[in-house]
Length: 439
Image (cartoon, rainbow, N blue to C red; front, side, top):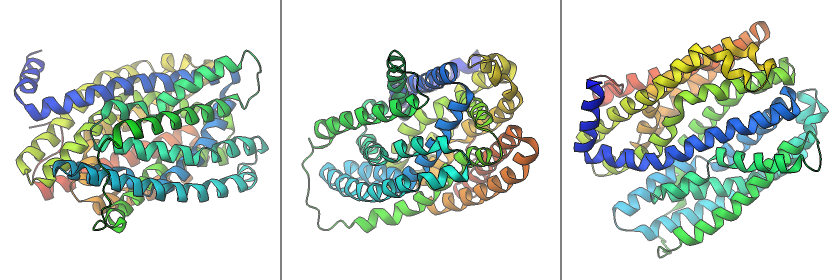
């Protein structure tokens, strides 16, 4: 209790920490709603369509995620960094110019990816030896461009610190809307493709809302025809981030794809529900990073090293405080948490516990990757993540045939711990402090 009182006193006396927590609180509320919506979405699918339908949706969404990370070109974090720098220099109009250029680029790339995913749906379904995947794959292919516009525009809003608006466009909110569409659709039909159609409808609704905020929030700043700014300037920063983001996505979905190759769709569904529950532990990480990222970029641009280092350590402490109760809950009651989705999911309880350890390490050290990206070390991050993904793929290939979903959980958690430890050690020896919740 004494330490909590000291912590709250520090918050009250530290303007930067107070600003970070205040901004993060908006994102955190939406993040909680988003996570709850994600659980509600998969609960609705599992209860009405079974574990196999959960597996089918996750396999189709995994390919969509790969397309999205390629289509974003690593621009999302680079946009935040460049727009934050423009705003800091009282040149907000430059941020509009940058965002417009990036939106045009990702839409063009997205059209190509959508075409390739659509025509390759049958081939991909054959890889998983399941013709039921063809139509879900095609549905996901059609929403690549809308999804890319939403993602890039939302990070533009984040760069301008419109965090409330940014929070609206997180995946969990789309899943909430998709859940409503599913429940409404069940009145009229019971087709197994209803989850995919409902999710696509939610993304299209999100596109309309994103366009509205583009005109309402972004274009209020005077657009500049900045001939002196070259798109290659932001691409030089974003391409290492593209590799990093690609590796993150690859790591997040390697277990799902390899499970889909070796195991049945119901086992893929059980594993993915276990993974979703483990995310409870790092629920605050996204919110903290959303606000801390802009502050890291501001302090780095202004060469305020002392404030930068102090805020970095504070993010680790806040993440740990939020993560610990959820970690304890998951470790003590894994079967009870899984039973909400149906009794067939309880077999994933050991995998859930293993995933919980990985997520706890991610929560405690999680802002380290964000810190390095926002302080000009995106190439270092790229190297760390590429190495971790290589280990992840090797472990998945070796362990899944022997251990099934437990092997996937071990591979994922080990890789998560690996990249966080590497990041923390790099910060210690190059910035001179441990980015951990310790003195």
